[in-house]
Length: 208
Image (cartoon, rainbow, N blue to C red):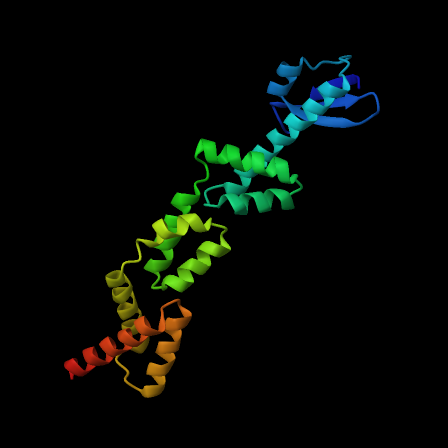
């Protein structure tokens, strides 16, 4: 494979376009130009060309991953899925995910803790929080440590606050039943939900 020409890529100061003798093209970065000694007339062996393609794919994947991440948190599983949807191979996506972990740009353990903190602050119970961890691809071996922040006292306080805002002093049986169902849907166990309703009823009766 012979390079017929090399020129600056459009809208880029660090990327270059290679045109080969079979009329195919490839965009490479300045580091690849230096590493492979790329220049017009350079004849690449099949091995060199394959290595260049592989490194090019990895570089493109890393650049794509950083763009996908932006300022958001994603798990290792989520970033791999997104990269594969963008056209990366399974192997390239995994290599990029490993690189992101090593550089600290993704951290499943910290992400798990952030998920628990976020949803518990919104008065969601353990079952709903676990569902969010599952949907975001957090490995199950990280769940236990992350869920330690869901202390029973905090769960009770969150449920009580939710009921006070939702019920607004009502003791209508239908409202109480709907509130009970709402707590269960939000991830609280039946026992925790029942206890929260009992505390709410006791509280409003003491105010009378």
